[in-house]
Image 1 (cartoon, helix red, strand yellow):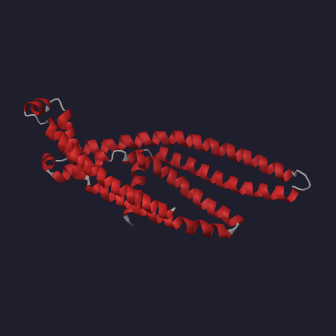
Image 2 (tube, rainbow, N blue to C red):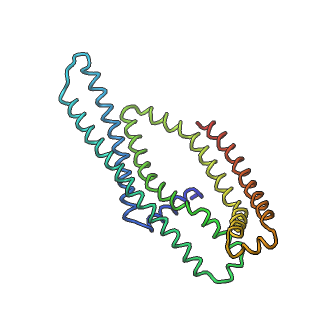
Length: 257
């Protein structure tokens, strides 16, 4: 299993451990919404054939009315599932975020004191703190990913029913987009991992400049300009790296699209 697969599995474990029942409810509601869209696709195809068959005569068949009624019912179910899924999903995000931060606090409170003298330990903690939006992203992506997978399978079946050639065309069209997205995400992860020392230095400077305890020393030794210059240089270095990533991202995305 590659890094991407391990990240997905780890995300599922994290969100599931934070709130298993809420997680399953969110996945189920998103899956119902996805399957409902597939059902509407098939019903729409049936309506189109029915209209073509009786369009010239002006006859409205009982089957046509039945398909319209089913479409309305399915549309109502999809609408409810989407709204309920969004509400449950918000609750899942909050519970995951709390669970994630509790893990960080327990680690910081339980490690031996000597670890606080280790740069490697501070780098690891900095990565965790600077990526505190990661649990939010996982909580948002895992349930929708599960629903999307169900929807993808359903859409493939629906397209195959209409015309099997549509499935092949869709799969081939997805390949360049998948390759560009894969390369972009790997580059962003490498940049985020490698910029940890820079981030930690910037946050430390911010804490010194903003802190009440360090304020007298900063003023007594006229350190403000020096610290701000160092902070600006570190931030400029980070932004320059992100600009390079964005240029590559746009180039790959344009080619893939």
